[in-house]
Length: 498
Image (cartoon, rainbow, N blue to C red; front, top):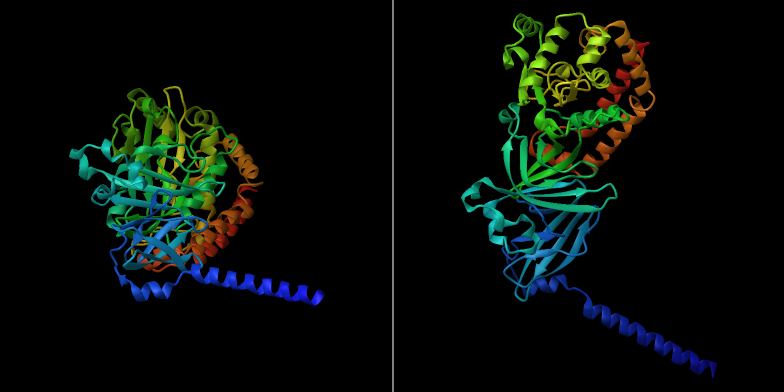
């Protein structure tokens, strides 16, 4: 009896194995069969979209890109045919997909990028597919045909802090930004969108800047400076943080490289700037300019004031000029600095420039904003690529390398940071330094940022792709050099403030 049961059970087991085998064989995708029985058609697929995001196509490397932390569940292919698809091979973040119908097939490569993507389409590319659900967010029916060539389509994927992925789409316009950017092959851009966009905790707005990071081989100096500046503002009730995000940019299916997407200062410093004053320092305020200014304080032009007026309120501007006249014509005292400047912001800014060795930010590359006639000046830093040991070199299109001797020179701090400060202001200045020294001006803080940038830019391959496209550089070596420089800089500042 037991023997019979064993035979029956064995037979059932073999029968089940046969069923499983034939089921798997019948459902197994036969890649070779498709390739051998179908005709290759490189025009089978026009486009690929995932979760409403049009995946940019890198023509040079024949790659579609999508920004995520994992492979998506499904794809949408734009084709004249009713197509199916299968992933037939994968290597790290690179997936190979075969797309096919009854007669044709095409082979597609998809790279899952861990860096957010900004994808910009010309209207000539968008309009033919305006009936697609994936493009309905562009609201093409709302735009004026007479302005056809003034519009671009912009899509942005960005990661929330909970690692979920969002896709944003809008019509807009784009222009080259920055005087120096026009001389470089890799341009910086300004995006003016019809819809508001915001990432993570950044308030939404329509105008954004794409910083090309061209002259800084580390690619992280502006980002590091902005992130550290935001820490300076913690618990200060000062609303002029600088938010930014690393992205990879595509324009009309052409890979443009690594960028930083950042908010514009004109809407991040004060909510009431429409009625206030916003000035951008565009050149260094050297002694000859100060002397000209003091000889006639009511002449307002870039040659004398070194400020470009972004938003103007005449009453506030006149008051600002009077205050500057008093400030630069006297030996500053605490009461005067406190009356003219938001003193907490003033001290933060000076300490910040001292930390990053921002020679180019002492009296240039900064914004002055004033909300009302009775309000004080708020300073916001900008363009901080000449920092963390890097200085301008007229003999090359890039900045020079580190200059250690220059950075650890006490005279530079005396002349550029604590000049015009009275004893009381200097004491407040020193107290603030040691307060920040507890948890902001530390190598633990700086290393945390550097490690995160290194992991993102190196592991994603974004730095190597950008380097291959524009010029050779090594982010890992650059970051390690900045790490060493920052450690020496903090030791120097400790000695200086002791």
